[in-house]
Image 1 (cartoon, rainbow, N blue to C red):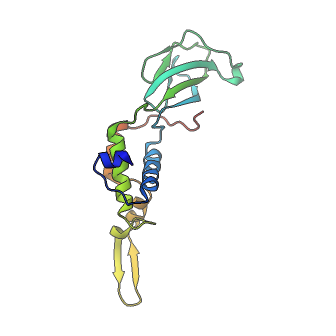
Image 2 (image 1 turned 180 degrees about the horizontal axis):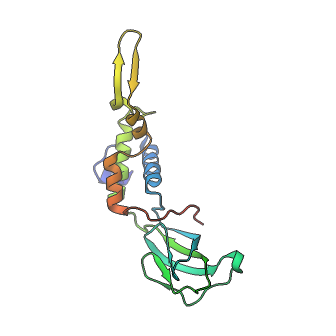
Image 3 (image 1 turned 60 degrees about the vertical axis):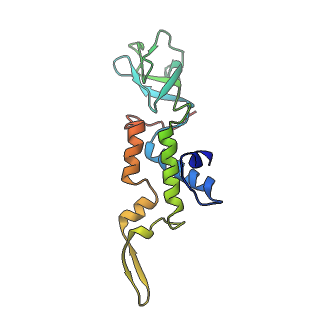
Length: 181
């Protein structure tokens, strides 16, 4: 809430936490990757003696091991390029289990600002659906209203400009983390 005020956003009084949580959920869903720092263990296929780590930014690689099916023994001599690849893996390794830390230790202001912007949009829309601007037709006698299908989608997701802002900060994910540890 302090970030919203600091950045000049005015959120509906009494609903600030809920609006920020809803906006954050939409952004995490669209990102397809972990945003805040977390440690995960993932099983990855080895290609050419290396693996590509999903869900950057990668901040540390703790261990690399053979999968349980291959005995689970630790692998030594591997190298991390400081970004998203582990290499110098044994030629016999087809899959490895990698434990690593990824995501932002400090969430960039651009993402904080985006969350606040989405929260404000959600707070100024019709509380349940967010579709008052998406009316395609309306009648008066025996009242009837029809919403545009695009508005229904926008009510539960990010708008195109918001997705573009998210991609400018995170880039396009090359892989997705399914089950962080």
